[in-house]
Length: 210
Image (cartoon, rainbow, N blue to C red; front, side, top):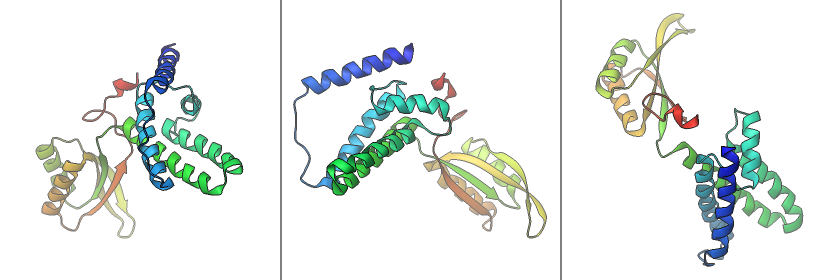
């Protein structure tokens, strides 16, 4: 019921504002620039709608429903897939040139909406393999007040047992983690990966999804 009424409210707002807002031509004659800017603007708006657990009644409604059936896919990704199918079919009517520009716009919509839903916090996942794992972990927890997990691992080349460290950190803390690692073990093996979304203690609360 809550989703239905939020979606109804969002749909009404979209209709009303499309009717009352004046038409302003801010785009250029460049199709690529229009696709990028228009896609980013639409993606930000769509991200706010998805963040509010609602829908505008368009493709995002179908994407939200499908996300329940395919939990490994985000609503933003499903919007990308569905819009891409629509655009590919539209190529038959509008031509290949405009269709390809539309695909660029759809991609920008997906990326912008995903960024809005995930929030501005950029998080990295750091894997550390080092003979000084205990000292590195202790310093990370002491200096950064950031939790770190030890995972038993075996190096198959030398058949040597080690503890692999797993840590999640923001952009600023990533630099500090690297400095700690370099101080204790300049020969450590480190892997840094982007985390699409980080939930739990120290990051976004899971309570936002209940």
